[in-house]
Amino acid sequence: MINEMLAAGMLFLGTVDDISNNMISVEYMMGNIIHTMDVPKETSVCEPEEGEFVLFYRDGIVKCFSKREI
Image (cartoon, rainbow, N blue to C red):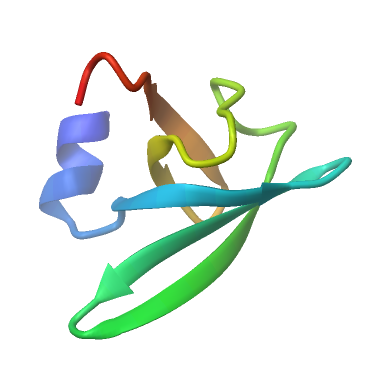
């Protein structure tokens, strides 16, 4: 499923900026502009830390990358 979402341009790579009670704020680049998207914690498949890279879409995070993986 992740491969199909990547091919369709639905997934983004970003950095976790902030984590609140039920939302995760993720920063990502589109062109030369930095955007921020808030995604729900409860539909995310992993629990990232601030500063960690994640693969995500508007409904949740689908992959967290530990600092050792990058």
